[in-house]
Length: 432
Image (cartoon, rainbow, N blue to C red; front, top):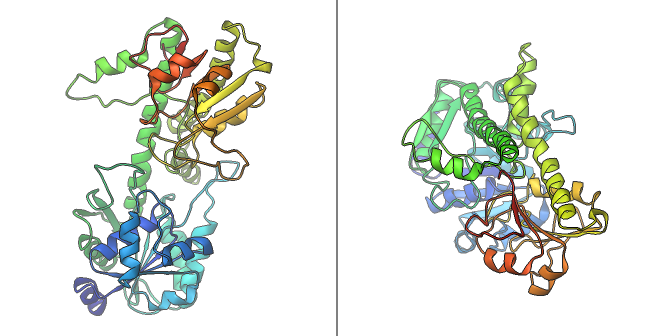
């Protein structure tokens, strides 16, 4: 342990990052900025090529920073897992999706761990950063690694440190967002904390990897539950002809005991829309049913259907037959001002809407093409706005001129309160 500890302290430890996506690539850049040499590993060869060319494909990984890190020799990428043996620290940042039955799919974690186990050597620190269910580190990863014949806390070290990336957030970045670490042993925790305190502003050590895993799920389940609460209240307020947006603004004036959350077409991003299912699935192993969490997920999953019904109703009230209508969706990213379309509720709205109207097209200044489809963003023009029967705002990007949009559109259905200050008869907002 002393040798690895010294390498971390003097920043001669070789850092490996497996998975060069929204978490992995910014993490690579942060370590290079603080003086470490970093090796990125990804099975997607296109990503590897782009990194080695000094190009960033992730919004939160600065293009110039990547270029400088590669040119200085601090950063390189490969798809060759044999290079793992050269790394003193290996951070796992691979996807953790759920399947069609909303059950965790840990195949990327287990496959990656098997590749590490084949090449594991003494004095290596492995840190899982992928969001997952509690006990993954100790009951899924550890047994695979110990098949190598090495013992945790003695020959190698294992910890969990949840990613806390908020795409597009300029105030809280990877550097100034506090880091949670929990190791399988005290030595594991010590080394993981030592590593992150050398590149991040604040690190909090917890007593186990299970605590760290549950912390991540609590953070995102908290958001999911509160979003579900305001979504349900939005439906009630609409029936009562009360403006939910004004209600939230008023409640937000209370300086304690209240935190504003806002209704919308559903929840998106990798974490909020998926994490509650990790927790519910794991809870069943202990004969425990997370009814409150599951109900919240159900409320949020129903929102895209409500939005589509809202569009159909608005079209009908505007004397437009829905089956012959053309609908333009504005914004398919899961949140404003980012190019991240992972699990965006706008995509679900599009899919449902296509079964109810003649044509659905979209515009998003940040997303030229929807992954896995032939759908491409169409230019937003005055002529287009006047031709379509309805403009549906699903993501409230700040670059949109909403006054201009409302002025030229026949009908606008707003799910994000982007038209808050516009009082026109052709605007329909949810929750009002």
